[in-house]
Length: 188
Image (cartoon, rainbow, N blue to C red; front, top):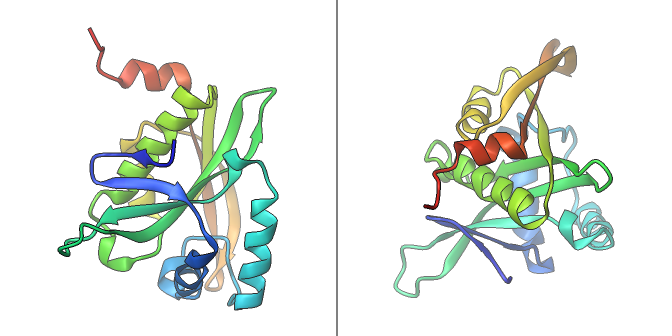
């Protein structure tokens, strides 16, 4: 399966050539405002991260989120990344992460569509049971996308994230396979 294809997006494996875009995104303070990154990243560090990521199981490799370009060639343009982290195969559970790095594509539903596509892949292809994530309470846009994707609030880590001179709560959200199946239209 070379791509995971949605209505307006596709997910593909990350390539070394993507490092320049990744660097641009993760060194943009607006993009990283709601990510764990707190320091600028050098090309050397990003290349080292890429090599380390490629040593992980393929199911945990970063996927690039692409949208069809409006140009005459119908090429695809990368706008962000997503990934399953630390899959626990015994419990069939994983953490999920997403970053829309191209700000021109914010607030257009691409995050929601990406989450839905990745969740479907996790449950339908990888046979996972539980998919979960952590999100800063101040990240209302992401919380909306996660809720639209079927994730529910499970709890919170109180004042667990320090940023801009204050502490913020971190929400824990998840979705179980049977909840996801119940939300899907029947194929009868």
